Amino acid sequence: MKHGVAFRKFSRTSSHRMLMLRNLVTSLLEHEQIKTTLPKARDTARLAEKIITLGKKGTVPAYRQAQGFVLNQTLLPKLFGDLSRRYAKRLGGYTRIHKYGNRPGDNAPVAILELVDNPRDLKFELAARSIGYELLSKEVQTQSHQHLLESGLPSAEETVEKELLLGPDARGSLRPYTRINVQKVLKYRDEEAKKEFIRKADDHVQTLMSDPNSLRGEVQVPSADGKKEIATFGRLDKAGKTLPGMVRGAMRLAKGALAKPHWNSQPWRQRQKLGIDRSLVDLRSTLSSSAAQADA
Amino acid sequence: MAALALRQAPSLSSFSRISFLAPFLSSVSLVPSLFAPPSFRWTIPALQSLLDLFPPFVLAVPKKKTSHSRKRMRSANKGLKDKLNLVHCPGCGSPKLAHSLCPNCYSQLSRGWKQQMREQL
Image 1 (cartoon, helix red, strand yellow):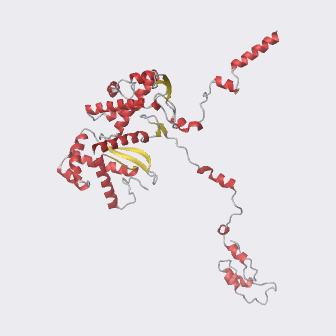
Image 2 (tube, one colour):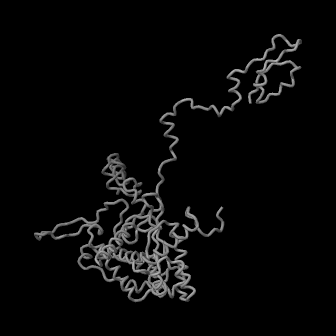
Image 3 (spheres, each protein chain N blue to C red):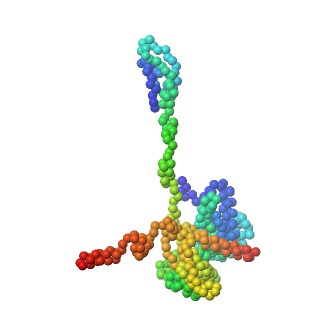
């Protein structure tokens, strides 16, 4: 039984385990984003947050404690300076764990452990991308692709400013979870970070529009000699792929051709041609013709 | 446990306890009493009766080669299970595992960072 036991053993002796965790925390403070196994990430996050708390305290005893734990003394000024300022207003939760599949060698579940609000903050980047994708999805449903490619999209600035003030239940341009993530990511950040966020969202919209595979439908692309050609964009070349504006279930997409077809996937015209079934219109016409013959 | 079939006179009741040591004791030929019936005899227990002492599962053996059909039917529940925790990445629209990072998005970001590092050097 493991009731109430706080720490993992990692199949190591006490000294080995402690040194491994100290190494992981030191690496995290140095690089601000590390990839390791999920259980190690969870234990390291716990210890790293305690060290950052020491950094926030800033007293001499706290400095001595951190000095005894961190294995690289050159990181102490960073811990008591940059990181302390970065997390001055944040009440705990200075680390974040992202699950990232399984390692090929031993199938171990892998996670990316990062310090929140670091220059490579993954949640920040992915939230910016989500906004870009969502705004493009909305535009694609209302405008034609030709018009979109020519005129482009308005900046995400308006949307972001508006959504930062909305509550989770309010109705806005973004989905509820996207809005929550945007608010979380920009909560303890300054104006420059917000500008960076908007810039990343706009960049992502540009990236998606420049990729010919990401817009569905036929678009007129002028050829070199001036004659207009029609190019079909948006091939669904991978199983489960969706394009901006498409809404389909992930499971059904992932199964591809092996998925059960939608109950209404074959339009009635096609079914008639193939002779699978006869529509009511057919039946009625035959009945009426036979009745007319009987009368006559 | 199979009991050894021993025919013995009542006068030899002290040796009549059916125990593990019974075959060894009974192999000793005892001098029959004068009033013992003539058909009485002690025999060294045969191999079959020795084998009878061991429980049946010790000597279990398959009777026939398992057919291909039966072997495959036994593996019916050993197949790969479908992954049901698939969702779309909100950033790029490609499929990904629920509650995990999108590998497509992460690889693009990672390559961008590495490019930056190379340009700085």
